[in-house]
Length: 102
Image (cartoon, rainbow, N blue to C red; front, side, top):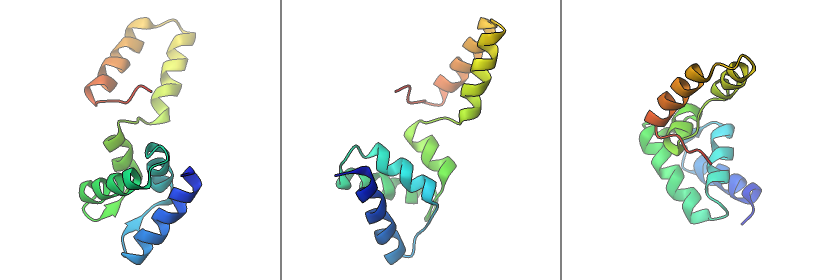
């Protein structure tokens, strides 16, 4: 199933169940489901539990092992200054948070 179709189906389901969500979270969940509506529903259920009844962007990112773009930008800045020690420190910290490196 196309990600866009999964996305709109999640909106329909969550609105009918009166579950609060933000649209960016659903985009991430649709992408992470890799074309499987069943996986999208399972991930949504997990996000609802983690968010205490609400699907929130930061919690979905953490649940899926994604990280904030600010880290990418900071690593790029450190690359410009050739600061490999700080880069490795950031990567080590991110690894402790079970980051998905794909």
